[in-house]
Amino acid sequence: MLFLIRDLQNTWLNIKTEIVRWSLKRASDDWLEAFAYYVRSQLIKKPFWFRGHLFFARYGREKKDLQFAYASALALERLARTAHQRFLAKLELANTHLACGNFEQALSIFRSIFERKRANFEVLCGQALALFGLTKYKEARETLELIPKEKRVPEVSLLLDSINAKLL
Image 1: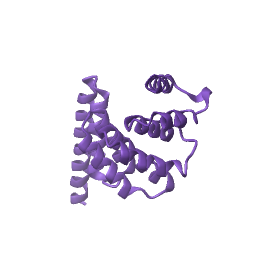
Image 2: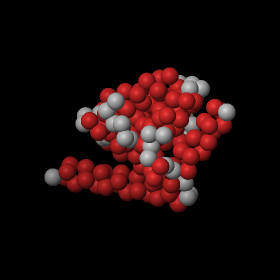
Image 3: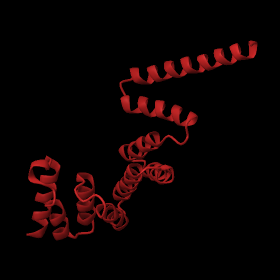
């Protein structure tokens, strides 16, 4: 019984320490870093946590640490169990290739996703960006035109304007 009490006290002490550290990082007004610290502490306990690795794939791209983002995206592929997780893993890997400038690899992955999810906004935008990076402007415009006008965000309109300017 004494061992159980000591174990519980140590566990509670570790939890309190983590909360204090996380609060200090949060107080620094860098929420992204604070959340990254929290996710990292959770991944130590649950290394197969899909959402944690998904966060780090996006976090790596946000921080321009593409090697870290690529490693996290590859981990996602290994951890994916459901069809939706496999879709998210492929999407993150394609976006990471896109961020690295590997347009052909990104396009290949986006096209494989497009075969299954034709109406997905992120897939269409990613595919168009990869085509734009490969200077295939007509195909990029055709891809973006698959997005209904009422669902187009300003970034899509800007990309269409850039493509149209290149085609003139």
